[in-house]
Image 1 (tube, rainbow, N blue to C red):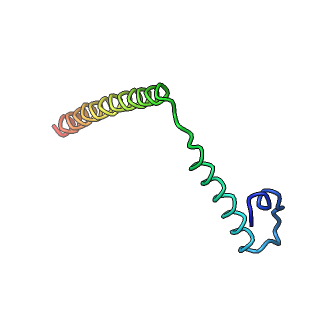
Image 2 (cartoon, helix red, strand yellow):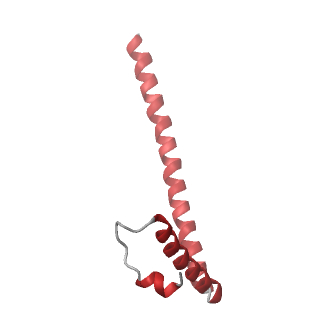
Image 3 (tube, rainbow, N blue to C red):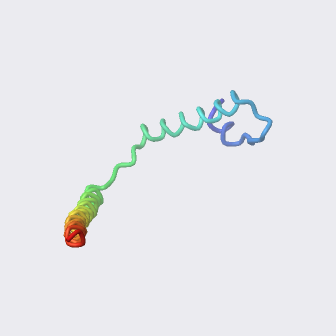
Length: 88
C-alpha cells in the first residue's frame, strides 16, 4: 500500500488486522522518509534557550527537594522530642 492509499482509506470496524498494519506501515514509512529527507533542525538559539529553561527547572526542583528533605528532618526531630517528653 502506498502513502496516498493509506491516507484515503476509511477505517471501519470490519477491517482486518493485516489491513490496519499495512496502513500504519505505509504512513510510518512516509513519515520516516520525510524526516530523513528534510530533518527538522532546531535553530541553535532555540536549542540554547531550551537548555537554559531545562536547567532552571532542574535547579528549582532540586532546591525544593532539598527544602523538603530539610523540613522532614526538622519535623521528625520534633516528633521524636515530643514522644520522648511524653514518656516522662
